Amino acid sequence: MAGFSEVADRVWVARYPWLDVNVSMVAGDTGLLVLDTQASAELAREVVADLRRVSAQPVLYAVNSHEHWDHTFGNGVLQAEGAELVCHETTAETLPEHAADVRRQAAEEDDPRYAAVAATEIVVPERTFSSAISLDLGDRFVELVHPGRGHTAGDLVVRVPDADVVLAGDLVEEGNPPGFGDDCFPMEWPLTLDTVLSLTTSSSVVVPGHGAVVDREYVEQQRNEIGIVAETIRDLATRGVPVADALAAADWPYDPRALTRAVTRGYEQLPRAQKRLPLV
Image (cartoon, rainbow, N blue to C red; front, side):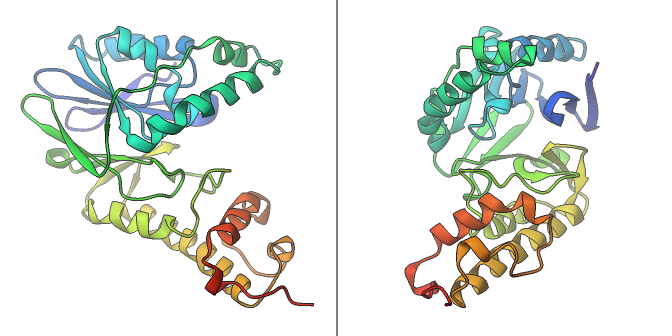
């Protein structure tokens, strides 16, 4: 059983074994904020049981760090607990199609955990924002900030200023290469992480979307590695190296097998002026 562990003043994190996903909880004197809601309604009910071992306070807000199913499919369960669902405006736009695709694919999997995913009806947050908002937990405010595009177009981070904590979602991942998926923005991700870093101090606790809690130094390292990926893509495209040859044409900070989508997306997102005709 994962359970919630306190990582700062009234800030808890539960690290769940399937997909190594984190769910975070912040308490004020009037209630709770939960960041991310797990990968199915069944798993979200486990989250609620775990958080009730920590606090009997009402759940005021359930926030989605981005659209992906492992962070959003428990929305309905948290809403039933009384939470107002909140996300970035882009996440609200893209979540329905993403959820439909995931449920369809999950129905074809043999793993029984995917049956619960396929059976989950997704609930899209109604409260959205574009740049930043503050949410009131009574004796403390938390800040939701959209620092830019990176892992997805709708990434947000949660800052708890009085506890010096940043809940970073999948803009930061511990122990693995970052999640360069079909909807990532590798050329913008480094600058997005610069904004995240601007919200931290040398003593900050940073909670990634997956893996163990990290510090500012870890985020700086991951920012630099993602920056190398972006600059390498730009260099290869500028020299006319075809996208199909890019992974074999350079040294990368991660296993090249993890960068297939990063390279493809990076080439697609470069302005025409930064691309040359392929070398022949």
